[in-house]
Amino acid sequence: MSPDVHNNILGALTGDDIRRIPQADPEPNRKRILRSENMFRAIQNHTAAPKRALFGEFWMERELAYMFATTGAGKSLYGNQIALAISEGRGFDDFRCEAGPLRVGLVDLENTLDDHKSRLGSYAEAKGYVNPNYFRIRVDPDADISEMSGNRNWFLEELKREQKENNLQALIIDNFSYLQATVADRDKQVFVGVVFQELKRIAENGCAVLVIGHTNKSRSKERSTIELADQSGSTQIQNVVERMIAIGSSVSDKYLKYAKLLKGRTDDPRFSHSSHVAALRLIRDPKEDNLVYLKREPHLDGPERNFLREEEGPSKTDQAKIYLDENPETTTQQLSEKFGIDKGLASRIKSGKR
Image 1 (cartoon, one colour):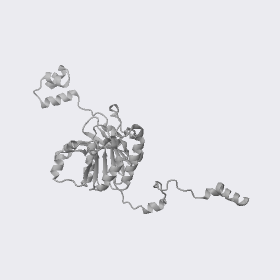
Image 2 (image 1 turned 180 degrees about the horizontal axis):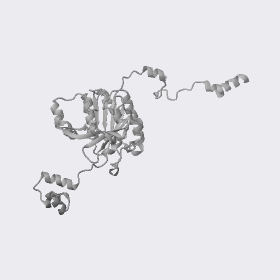
Image 3 (image 1 turned 135 degrees about the vertical axis):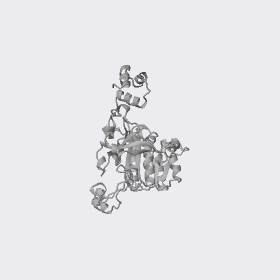
C-alpha cells in the first residue's frame, strides 16, 4: 500500500471525517421519553372539549388537584361527599357538577367501613339501590406489606389497573400520607415527584384526580390563615398540581368550616382571591336520611379572618338575665354559682335592678 493511500485511510479514521460517521444508539431498545412537535400544528390538532366542573370552581375535568385540611376539618368526609355527588350526577348547593354522572373511585386508605356506614348507611338504604358508579378502592387485607415497601411503583401500577378495569373517570385518593409511610425518608422526594407526575398524566388522559393530604399547621397557629406553605410534605406537590384547596375550621363554631382555593384559575369572582373563602357547615340532615355532610353556607362567605376570631357573645350579666327569664324559680345563690358572678350582682339581677 502506498504511503498516500495509507495516510488517507488513517486520516479518515482519526480526523474530522470520523465526526460525520453516524453513531450507533447505545440503547437501541430503550423507549423514547422526549418527543418534538410543531407548537401551532399541535394546538390546531388538539380537539379536547372544554373542561366541565366536577366540584364547582375548585376541581375540573382532566385536572390533578390537591386538598389538605386542618385536623378535624372533615377532609375525608368532604372527599366522600364529592365522590358521591359526582357519581350521582349532581352538585351540592352552588358547587355544581356539570359532567356527571361519572364513574368515580375513592382510593380509601384511611377509613373503615364502619366510618362510611355511620355517614352513608341510612342514605344508601333509603335509596334502595346500589350506586353503580361509586367504587371503593382499598389495600387488600391479604397484601404483602413488604412488597409495598420494597416496590416503589406498586401503587401506580395497581391504580392504573383499577382505573382501566372499572373505566373510572374520576379518582379521589384519601390520603397521601399513607403511601409515604411505606417509603424511606431518603426516597420520599423522588417518590412524591414520580407519583404526582404520573397522576397528572392520568388526569390529562381523561380521569381527573383529587388527592387528599394533611397540613403541618400546629395548634398554636390555628388562628392564622392557611397558606401554601402549610401543606404537609414535599413542595413538589404544589408545583405539579393544577389546583390546591384547603379546608379550615372556624375558631368560634366547631361545626363551621371553610374551603379556600390557594392555587388555580377561577371565573367565579367570589373565590378569585385566596383570602375569600366558601363557608360550610357540618350537619346530619334528617331530610337526606341522616346523611352526614358539609352543607354550603354562602351567606357566611367572606374573608378567612372572619373564621379565625372569637365571636363576641353576651356578657355574664346578660347571660344571667336570659337564664332567669327562662327559669324564674332560680335563686340568687344558684344564679351566682352558675355564672360566676358575686351575690350582690346576682341579687340585683334577680330583683330586676340590673
